[in-house]
Length: 365
Image 1 (spheres, rainbow, N blue to C red):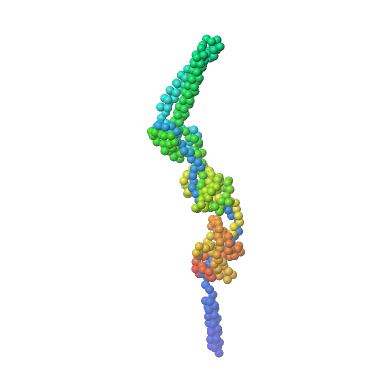
Image 2 (cartoon, helix red, strand yellow):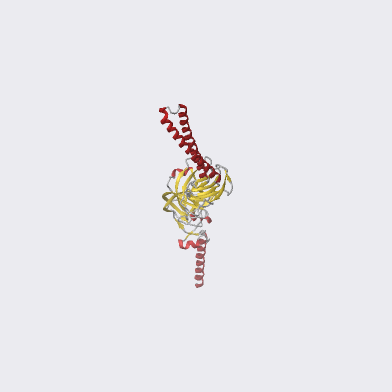
Protein backbone atom coordinates (compact mmCIF):
# COMPACT_ATOMS: atom_id res chain seq x y z
CA UNK A 1 0.00 0.00 0.00
CA UNK A 2 2.83 2.36 0.85
CA UNK A 3 4.53 1.64 -2.48
CA UNK A 4 1.31 2.38 -4.35
CA UNK A 5 0.94 5.76 -2.67
CA UNK A 6 4.54 6.71 -3.43
CA UNK A 7 4.08 5.79 -7.09
CA UNK A 8 0.91 7.88 -7.32
CA UNK A 9 2.62 10.92 -5.77
CA UNK A 10 5.57 10.60 -8.16
CA UNK A 11 3.25 10.52 -11.16
CA UNK A 12 1.41 13.63 -9.90
CA UNK A 13 4.64 15.61 -9.50
CA UNK A 14 5.83 14.63 -12.97
CA UNK A 15 2.52 15.71 -14.51
CA UNK A 16 2.66 19.11 -12.75
CA UNK A 17 6.24 19.71 -13.93
CA UNK A 18 5.35 18.76 -17.50
CA UNK A 19 2.38 21.14 -17.50
CA UNK A 20 4.58 23.98 -16.22
CA UNK A 21 7.20 23.31 -18.91
CA UNK A 22 4.53 23.25 -21.60
CA UNK A 23 3.09 26.59 -20.42
CA UNK A 24 6.55 28.17 -20.31
CA UNK A 25 7.42 27.00 -23.80
CA UNK A 26 4.10 28.36 -25.12
CA UNK A 27 4.87 31.95 -23.84
CA UNK A 28 6.55 34.16 -26.52
CA UNK A 29 10.21 34.93 -26.03
CA UNK A 30 11.19 38.61 -25.65
CA UNK A 31 13.14 39.91 -28.65
CA UNK A 32 14.92 42.71 -26.75
CA UNK A 33 15.19 44.32 -23.40
CA UNK A 34 14.10 47.92 -23.97
CA UNK A 35 13.50 51.18 -22.18
CA UNK A 36 10.29 53.02 -22.96
CA UNK A 37 9.93 56.80 -23.23
CA UNK A 38 7.15 59.25 -23.96
CA UNK A 39 7.25 62.30 -26.19
CA UNK A 40 8.07 65.40 -24.16
CA UNK A 41 6.67 68.87 -24.86
CA UNK A 42 9.15 71.76 -24.78
CA UNK A 43 9.74 75.25 -26.14
CA UNK A 44 12.21 75.17 -29.02
CA UNK A 45 13.87 78.01 -30.88
CA UNK A 46 12.36 78.36 -34.34
CA UNK A 47 15.02 78.69 -37.03
CA UNK A 48 15.55 78.55 -40.77
CA UNK A 49 18.74 76.86 -41.97
CA UNK A 50 20.60 78.05 -45.04
CA UNK A 51 23.97 77.70 -46.75
CA UNK A 52 26.03 80.37 -48.44
CA UNK A 53 29.38 82.05 -48.87
CA UNK A 54 31.13 84.89 -47.13
CA UNK A 55 31.91 87.87 -49.36
CA UNK A 56 33.07 91.46 -49.13
CA UNK A 57 30.30 93.93 -48.36
CA UNK A 58 31.58 96.15 -51.17
CA UNK A 59 34.79 96.12 -53.17
CA UNK A 60 36.33 99.34 -54.41
CA UNK A 61 38.38 99.07 -57.60
CA UNK A 62 41.29 101.49 -57.55
CA UNK A 63 42.51 102.28 -61.05
CA UNK A 64 44.77 104.66 -62.90
CA UNK A 65 43.54 107.91 -64.41
CA UNK A 66 46.82 109.11 -65.83
CA UNK A 67 48.11 107.85 -69.17
CA UNK A 68 51.57 106.70 -70.19
CA UNK A 69 53.19 107.00 -66.76
CA UNK A 70 55.24 104.25 -65.12
CA UNK A 71 54.70 103.03 -61.56
CA UNK A 72 57.58 104.43 -59.52
CA UNK A 73 56.78 102.90 -56.13
CA UNK A 74 54.26 100.58 -54.46
CA UNK A 75 53.23 101.38 -50.89
CA UNK A 76 50.54 98.74 -50.17
CA UNK A 77 50.27 94.99 -50.43
CA UNK A 78 47.51 92.41 -50.20
CA UNK A 79 46.08 92.20 -46.69
CA UNK A 80 47.14 95.70 -45.62
CA UNK A 81 44.66 97.75 -43.63
CA UNK A 82 44.63 101.25 -45.10
CA UNK A 83 42.89 104.51 -44.26
CA UNK A 84 41.04 106.75 -46.68
CA UNK A 85 43.55 108.87 -48.61
CA UNK A 86 46.51 106.57 -47.91
CA UNK A 87 49.11 106.40 -50.68
CA UNK A 88 48.91 103.02 -52.40
CA UNK A 89 51.26 103.71 -55.32
CA UNK A 90 53.23 106.56 -56.82
CA UNK A 91 53.55 107.10 -60.58
CA UNK A 92 56.56 108.73 -62.21
CA UNK A 93 55.71 112.44 -62.07
CA UNK A 94 58.76 114.07 -63.66
CA UNK A 95 57.07 114.79 -67.00
CA UNK A 96 53.93 116.07 -65.32
CA UNK A 97 55.98 118.22 -62.93
CA UNK A 98 57.82 119.80 -65.89
CA UNK A 99 54.56 120.53 -67.68
CA UNK A 100 53.14 122.05 -64.50
CA UNK A 101 56.21 124.29 -64.12
CA UNK A 102 55.85 125.52 -67.71
CA UNK A 103 52.13 126.18 -67.19
CA UNK A 104 52.79 128.16 -64.03
CA UNK A 105 55.47 130.21 -65.79
CA UNK A 106 53.11 130.94 -68.68
CA UNK A 107 50.44 131.95 -66.17
CA UNK A 108 52.82 134.35 -64.44
CA UNK A 109 53.72 135.91 -67.81
CA UNK A 110 50.04 136.15 -68.75
CA UNK A 111 49.26 137.89 -65.47
CA UNK A 112 52.00 140.45 -66.10
CA UNK A 113 50.72 141.08 -69.63
CA UNK A 114 47.19 141.35 -68.27
CA UNK A 115 48.24 143.91 -65.66
CA UNK A 116 49.92 146.05 -68.37
CA UNK A 117 46.88 145.75 -70.65
CA UNK A 118 44.52 146.74 -67.85
CA UNK A 119 46.64 149.83 -67.05
CA UNK A 120 46.68 150.91 -70.74
CA UNK A 121 42.95 150.38 -71.03
CA UNK A 122 42.30 152.46 -67.89
CA UNK A 123 44.34 155.36 -69.34
CA UNK A 124 42.49 155.08 -72.62
CA UNK A 125 39.17 155.35 -70.80
CA UNK A 126 40.37 158.43 -68.91
CA UNK A 127 41.70 160.19 -72.03
CA UNK A 128 38.83 159.24 -74.31
CA UNK A 129 36.73 162.36 -73.52
CA UNK A 130 39.70 164.68 -74.21
CA UNK A 131 40.30 163.31 -77.70
CA UNK A 132 44.04 162.84 -77.13
CA UNK A 133 43.77 159.27 -78.38
CA UNK A 134 42.00 158.34 -81.54
CA UNK A 135 39.03 156.02 -81.44
CA UNK A 136 41.12 153.31 -83.10
CA UNK A 137 43.83 153.55 -80.45
CA UNK A 138 41.26 153.38 -77.66
CA UNK A 139 39.65 150.30 -79.22
CA UNK A 140 43.00 148.56 -79.56
CA UNK A 141 43.83 149.12 -75.90
CA UNK A 142 40.45 147.86 -74.74
CA UNK A 143 40.75 144.82 -77.01
CA UNK A 144 44.25 144.09 -75.70
CA UNK A 145 42.88 144.17 -72.18
CA UNK A 146 40.19 141.59 -73.01
CA UNK A 147 42.69 139.35 -74.80
CA UNK A 148 45.13 139.52 -71.87
CA UNK A 149 42.38 138.56 -69.42
CA UNK A 150 41.33 135.63 -71.64
CA UNK A 151 44.92 134.48 -71.96
CA UNK A 152 45.34 134.57 -68.19
CA UNK A 153 42.16 132.53 -67.74
CA UNK A 154 43.39 129.96 -70.25
CA UNK A 155 46.77 129.57 -68.55
CA UNK A 156 45.09 129.35 -65.14
CA UNK A 157 42.96 126.49 -66.48
CA UNK A 158 46.06 124.86 -67.89
CA UNK A 159 47.73 125.04 -64.49
CA UNK A 160 44.65 123.49 -62.89
CA UNK A 161 44.71 120.66 -65.43
CA UNK A 162 48.39 119.97 -64.80
CA UNK A 163 47.78 120.04 -61.05
CA UNK A 164 45.06 117.42 -61.54
CA UNK A 165 47.48 115.33 -63.59
CA UNK A 166 50.04 115.69 -60.83
CA UNK A 167 47.49 114.56 -58.24
CA UNK A 168 46.66 111.56 -60.42
CA UNK A 169 50.23 110.36 -60.12
CA UNK A 170 49.38 109.53 -56.49
CA UNK A 171 47.15 106.44 -56.29
CA UNK A 172 45.15 106.92 -53.07
CA UNK A 173 42.75 104.70 -51.12
CA UNK A 174 39.17 105.89 -51.71
CA UNK A 175 37.98 104.56 -48.33
CA UNK A 176 39.11 102.73 -45.22
CA UNK A 177 39.50 99.03 -45.84
CA UNK A 178 41.67 96.01 -46.59
CA UNK A 179 43.65 95.56 -49.78
CA UNK A 180 42.23 92.36 -51.27
CA UNK A 181 44.08 92.38 -54.61
CA UNK A 182 47.11 94.12 -56.13
CA UNK A 183 47.56 94.05 -59.89
CA UNK A 184 50.05 96.92 -60.01
CA UNK A 185 53.63 96.02 -60.96
CA UNK A 186 56.63 98.22 -60.31
CA UNK A 187 57.78 99.89 -63.54
CA UNK A 188 54.65 99.06 -65.53
CA UNK A 189 53.21 101.86 -67.67
CA UNK A 190 49.58 102.45 -66.73
CA UNK A 191 46.62 103.34 -68.91
CA UNK A 192 43.43 105.17 -67.96
CA UNK A 193 40.93 102.83 -66.28
CA UNK A 194 43.51 100.13 -65.63
CA UNK A 195 42.82 98.31 -62.33
CA UNK A 196 45.72 98.51 -59.91
CA UNK A 197 44.24 97.59 -56.52
CA UNK A 198 41.04 96.18 -55.07
CA UNK A 199 39.83 97.23 -51.65
CA UNK A 200 37.29 95.70 -49.23
CA UNK A 201 35.50 98.83 -48.12
CA UNK A 202 35.54 99.50 -44.37
CA UNK A 203 36.78 95.91 -43.86
CA UNK A 204 33.14 94.81 -43.78
CA UNK A 205 32.14 91.27 -44.67
CA UNK A 206 28.73 89.77 -45.30
CA UNK A 207 27.20 86.32 -45.64
CA UNK A 208 25.24 85.71 -48.84
CA UNK A 209 22.92 82.73 -48.59
CA UNK A 210 20.10 81.17 -50.56
CA UNK A 211 16.72 80.82 -48.88
CA UNK A 212 13.73 79.06 -50.40
CA UNK A 213 10.84 81.21 -51.54
CA UNK A 214 8.52 79.53 -49.03
CA UNK A 215 10.66 80.80 -46.12
CA UNK A 216 11.01 84.40 -47.30
CA UNK A 217 7.80 85.54 -45.63
CA UNK A 218 9.31 84.72 -42.21
CA UNK A 219 12.41 86.86 -42.71
CA UNK A 220 12.70 90.48 -41.57
CA UNK A 221 15.61 92.89 -41.75
CA UNK A 222 17.41 93.13 -38.43
CA UNK A 223 16.84 89.49 -37.48
CA UNK A 224 19.69 87.73 -35.70
CA UNK A 225 21.50 85.10 -37.72
CA UNK A 226 24.01 82.58 -36.33
CA UNK A 227 26.61 82.10 -39.08
CA UNK A 228 29.14 79.29 -38.67
CA UNK A 229 32.07 79.25 -41.11
CA UNK A 230 33.95 76.08 -41.95
CA UNK A 231 36.06 74.98 -39.00
CA UNK A 232 35.13 78.11 -37.10
CA UNK A 233 32.94 79.34 -34.28
CA UNK A 234 29.50 80.83 -34.80
CA UNK A 235 29.22 84.56 -35.49
CA UNK A 236 26.20 86.67 -34.65
CA UNK A 237 25.11 88.53 -37.78
CA UNK A 238 22.21 90.80 -38.71
CA UNK A 239 19.98 90.34 -41.73
CA UNK A 240 20.47 93.50 -43.82
CA UNK A 241 18.73 92.81 -47.10
CA UNK A 242 16.48 90.26 -48.77
CA UNK A 243 16.68 90.07 -52.55
CA UNK A 244 13.50 91.34 -54.22
CA UNK A 245 13.66 88.58 -56.85
CA UNK A 246 13.60 84.78 -56.79
CA UNK A 247 15.64 82.60 -59.13
CA UNK A 248 13.11 80.94 -61.46
CA UNK A 249 15.26 77.80 -61.70
CA UNK A 250 16.06 77.10 -58.05
CA UNK A 251 13.13 79.00 -56.50
CA UNK A 252 15.59 80.48 -54.04
CA UNK A 253 16.35 84.07 -53.17
CA UNK A 254 19.58 85.64 -51.96
CA UNK A 255 19.77 87.19 -48.52
CA UNK A 256 22.56 89.43 -47.23
CA UNK A 257 23.72 89.25 -43.61
CA UNK A 258 26.17 91.72 -42.06
CA UNK A 259 28.95 90.03 -40.09
CA UNK A 260 31.02 91.38 -37.22
CA UNK A 261 34.75 91.83 -37.62
CA UNK A 262 36.47 88.45 -37.31
CA UNK A 263 40.12 87.77 -38.05
CA UNK A 264 39.56 84.12 -39.05
CA UNK A 265 36.76 84.78 -41.54
CA UNK A 266 37.76 85.42 -45.13
CA UNK A 267 35.80 86.19 -48.31
CA UNK A 268 35.00 83.07 -50.29
CA UNK A 269 34.61 80.79 -47.27
CA UNK A 270 31.57 78.52 -47.09
CA UNK A 271 29.32 79.00 -44.05
CA UNK A 272 26.09 77.63 -42.63
CA UNK A 273 23.57 79.85 -40.93
CA UNK A 274 20.44 79.79 -38.83
CA UNK A 275 17.90 82.61 -38.90
CA UNK A 276 16.42 83.07 -35.43
CA UNK A 277 12.63 83.42 -35.68
CA UNK A 278 11.71 83.15 -32.00
CA UNK A 279 10.45 80.05 -30.21
CA UNK A 280 7.54 77.62 -30.50
CA UNK A 281 6.27 74.52 -28.67
CA UNK A 282 7.49 71.13 -29.84
CA UNK A 283 6.76 67.50 -28.99
CA UNK A 284 10.03 65.59 -29.16
CA UNK A 285 11.61 62.16 -28.75
CA UNK A 286 15.23 61.03 -28.64
CA UNK A 287 16.47 60.55 -32.19
CA UNK A 288 17.29 56.94 -31.30
CA UNK A 289 13.55 56.26 -30.92
CA UNK A 290 12.83 57.10 -34.57
CA UNK A 291 13.63 54.57 -37.30
CA UNK A 292 13.80 55.46 -40.99
CA UNK A 293 12.49 52.74 -43.29
CA UNK A 294 11.60 53.05 -46.97
CA UNK A 295 11.81 56.83 -46.77
CA UNK A 296 9.40 57.14 -43.82
CA UNK A 297 9.88 57.69 -40.09
CA UNK A 298 8.55 55.10 -37.60
CA UNK A 299 8.40 54.55 -33.88
CA UNK A 300 7.57 51.35 -32.04
CA UNK A 301 4.73 51.67 -29.55
CA UNK A 302 4.80 49.31 -26.58
CA UNK A 303 1.40 47.87 -25.57
CA UNK A 304 0.22 46.57 -22.22
CA UNK A 305 1.18 43.05 -23.30
CA UNK A 306 4.74 44.25 -24.10
CA UNK A 307 4.07 43.69 -27.78
CA UNK A 308 5.33 46.47 -30.09
CA UNK A 309 3.54 48.01 -33.05
CA UNK A 310 5.32 49.90 -35.80
CA UNK A 311 3.72 53.35 -36.22
CA UNK A 312 4.46 55.95 -38.90
CA UNK A 313 5.11 59.47 -37.60
CA UNK A 314 5.83 62.85 -39.15
CA UNK A 315 9.04 64.50 -37.98
CA UNK A 316 10.19 68.09 -38.03
CA UNK A 317 13.07 69.96 -36.47
CA UNK A 318 16.10 68.50 -34.74
CA UNK A 319 17.60 69.92 -31.59
CA UNK A 320 20.74 68.18 -30.38
CA UNK A 321 19.89 64.52 -29.75
CA UNK A 322 16.12 65.05 -29.98
CA UNK A 323 13.74 65.19 -32.92
CA UNK A 324 10.38 66.90 -33.19
CA UNK A 325 7.27 64.75 -33.75
CA UNK A 326 4.68 66.76 -35.66
CA UNK A 327 2.13 64.01 -36.26
CA UNK A 328 1.17 60.39 -35.62
CA UNK A 329 1.93 60.28 -31.89
CA UNK A 330 0.64 61.79 -28.66
CA UNK A 331 2.48 62.60 -25.47
CA UNK A 332 1.06 59.67 -23.44
CA UNK A 333 2.20 56.78 -25.61
CA UNK A 334 5.11 54.57 -24.58
CA UNK A 335 7.61 53.95 -27.35
CA UNK A 336 10.92 52.11 -27.53
CA UNK A 337 13.75 54.52 -26.72
CA UNK A 338 16.58 52.81 -28.64
CA UNK A 339 17.31 49.61 -30.52
CA UNK A 340 14.08 49.90 -32.50
CA UNK A 341 15.98 49.14 -35.67
CA UNK A 342 16.26 45.52 -34.51
CA UNK A 343 12.50 45.15 -34.00
CA UNK A 344 9.66 44.15 -36.28
CA UNK A 345 5.97 44.85 -35.99
CA UNK A 346 4.41 42.49 -33.41
CA UNK A 347 7.62 41.58 -31.57
CA UNK A 348 7.45 41.07 -27.83
CA UNK A 349 9.93 43.01 -25.72
CA UNK A 350 11.01 43.04 -22.12
CA UNK A 351 10.57 46.48 -20.56
CA UNK A 352 13.31 47.29 -18.07
CA UNK A 353 14.08 50.39 -16.00
CA UNK A 354 16.19 53.06 -17.66
CA UNK A 355 19.34 52.39 -15.62
CA UNK A 356 19.33 48.70 -16.48
CA UNK A 357 18.12 49.32 -20.01
CA UNK A 358 21.10 51.48 -20.91
CA UNK A 359 23.31 48.44 -20.56
CA UNK A 360 20.83 45.88 -21.87
CA UNK A 361 19.44 47.72 -24.91
CA UNK A 362 20.15 45.84 -28.10
CA UNK A 363 21.03 42.57 -26.35
CA UNK A 364 18.89 39.61 -27.34
CA UNK A 365 17.31 37.56 -24.60
